[in-house]
Image 1 (tube, helix red, strand yellow):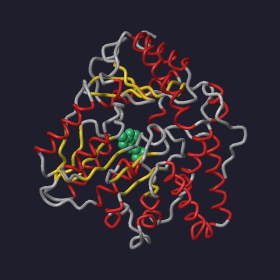
Image 2: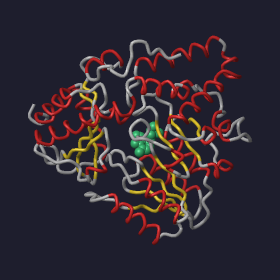
Image 3: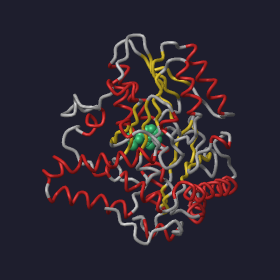
Image 4: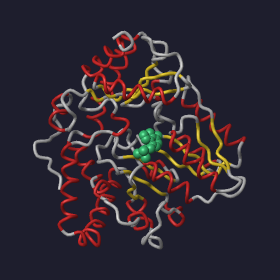
Length: 404
Ligand SMILES: Cc1ncc(COP(=O)(O)O)c(C=O)c1O
């Protein structure tokens, strides 16, 4: 199903890769892989072939073949993420993974879910919805602010919070925060959760393909992560890992024919759906390995993002979001824009979102503008199709944005 002809571990990264392996147009400067990624042509072609197979005989597909392919994909991904395949299911996205866990966790009156100021916005909303549904429950909000001085500072904040809120039943912990781009000390936080008898739900939306993952060793209660960001899967492909102890009470948000079945079938059968993106998770892994795997990819992308960060900070005479080097994300960085080159001192979320479209429409440069503690930041990503020229073009546009 996957054509890897002509691809090897020496494939040239940068412009050549962009033109041969992705569908990005020649002129676009794409510096926001972190939001939706881009699907390599070979992976997209594999998905098309599955769709053709589905249409050749829909009944064969829905009654038999799709489950076979899906279970094969789960097994390949379980190997890749170092876990047992019976603990792993495929879901369309991280939101679905987290919502499935939150909705299944029948909170009792007085109990609470812990989130933080850095929890992804849509997950904050999901938490709010769940605590409204279960009467007498609440969300406890841990206020993590910048600068962050060390991973230990984060661990201490969580510990104080667990001590002062013994009603916390479940903690949603971001592995990589978004959009602020901080790697959290997840292993230490999971240990803390075990100590305080809190269920740990790891939001790893940005983690697969970005940070080495050993799901068995991580020993969380739940882990979810998108494969469409850093692992090159088609959109609609994410994993949900569930600790064996919890299999009996975790249900997908949609109840269907799989209701009384074991975890995997429960999640597979959620009404008639197109599973081709989830199935292609296994081909995304093949592609990722074929171009050199994590070591080679991160060597290129982390080298590039470090150089780009240094270049932009100097050019714009500004600074990066204040976090320790050890908590930086391999492929993303946040750089302060408030008060620089005519950008406003303070912004709200909608203004930063508007800027993304404005710069994209005027300059064909795609990057994220984000609002952290009411200040405007630029978030840049690096991937194997980027080069320093991309960041130079961005730098020029930002320098002259208010004078052009
Ligand atoms: C930390 C985090 N959690 C959850 C999500 C939601 O992912 P999705 O919209 O694919 O469900 C994102 C998306 O970027 C994210 O960064």
